[in-house]
Structure formats: C-alpha cells, structure tokens
Length: 295
Image 1 (cartoon, one colour):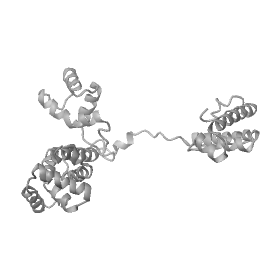
Image 2 (image 1 turned 180 degrees about the horizontal axis):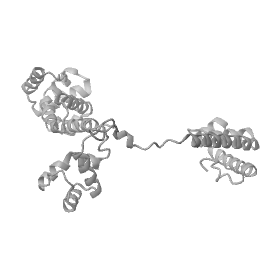
Image 3 (image 1 turned 180 degrees about the vertical axis):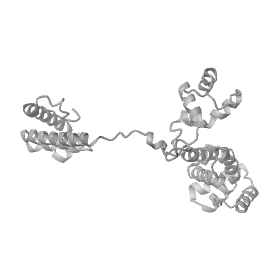
Image 4 (image 1 turned 90 degrees about the vertical axis):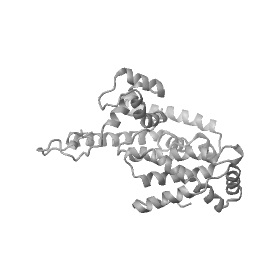
C-alpha cells in the first residue's frame, strides 16, 4: 500500500489526489478482496482493499489537525491503523470493512496524538482519553470556552456526561489550558535563576548514603550467619524463594528437587522458623531489623 506521505506540499497534494481517485468498492467486491487476503494472503487484494480507504484515513486525520501535529504524521499513523484493520478483519462477520477500519484508524491516530501532543504523558486510561478528546467539544456545547477555572456546575455536567470523576475533569482542563515549559527557561527576564532550580533534590545526603550502605552490609552479614543454621536443601529453598530478586515458584523448585510443591512449602516453612530463631539470637527482633523479606 502506498502510505508514504511526504511533508513537502506538492507531494501532499499529489497523495491526496491519488487517494481520492481510488474507486469506491461495492460490498460484494470488498468482501471478495477481504477473503482473498485472509485466506490466500493475496497482496494484490490487500492493496486494492486498503487503497480504496486511504480517503477514510485522510478524512479521519484531518479531524485531529487542531492538536498542532503535522498532517503527514497523522496520516501515516492512520495508515498503520488501516493495515492493522486489514490484518484482523474477519469477512464472515458481515460487517463492512470501512466500518471496522474506522475504529482502528481513529485509535491509531489518537494514540499518536496522546504520545506526541505534550512531553508530559497525557491520558493513560480510557476515561482520561475520553476526556482529552471530548473536553473542548463539550465545553463549547455549554458555552464554557474560557481559559479560566471551570464552574462547579460545568464540571459536574461534563463529569456526568462522560462518566468520570469531577476532579479528573478539572485536572484535564488545567492540563489542556497549559503549555509545556522548559526547565531551563529563566524564571524572570532579568534573573539568572531557572525553573529547574526550584526542583527539590530527593537523593540521600552523603551521611545518609554511608549509613544505608553500612546498615545493608550488617544485614547481609546477619543473614549469612543465620543461614548456617539450615541444611543445604533448606538454604537453597530460602535463597530461591526469599532472597532472590525473582522468586522461584514452589512447583519449579519441586521439579528441581524431585519432590512435590507441597513438600517444598513445608520445608520452606520449617526453614523460615529455624532462620527466625537464629536471627533472634543474633539481633533480637528480625522484623525491626528489616530482615526476613517476604515473610
């Protein structure tokens, strides 16, 4: 499928003209093409099927131009959605391909807008996506087009209309009315300070780093000494189940040791008891010392 959509003006117009000249498909012919592609992987059928609906991609992309993203990029993403629709379309469901493809085209373009509209991630849930793409339209419907704070009545109406919490409406309205700001931008025209200067440094101070490193070393030493109270099989189970970053399942250990997973659980329970008693002799209360992870 010809899906190259150049940013060059004349090339853009040529692409659109070619897309608009592609003949519309009758329902029976569309169904035949879809079956040939799905059952025989006939690429000629795929090209004819998708070429007929490039106009649908362009029409859909034009609806998202006001988000400030290049039209060629929107069309390219729409073409991705069109190809995904062709790959998943099931002819026997008796639904027109154009109807099915519309959802995939719109979804692909919307995901692209959400990823690129701002450097700050926006709309990670279905309700947030609905807010992002419908808030301006709904505010215009109730004549609430100002950039100021929305009234409680307007927030409540939109929240009920979209089935989302009022706080989400307020947060999205603030997000859409603001623009991204560089952290390197000066706070004042005649000042030397930058906005990043106001960000707190949450990393540990050197003294804290030394103390944390020292405490970590002590805890490792205590656990190593306590593990001496266990036999080799118990030690292996505790290491794999409690002291590894990726815990191994009881079933996996059972296969490895040639025993049932229930027997592994019993041994683990007994070993934890022995380990706790050993740690109590070394440090007192192992829970207060931050030991025995996962128990």
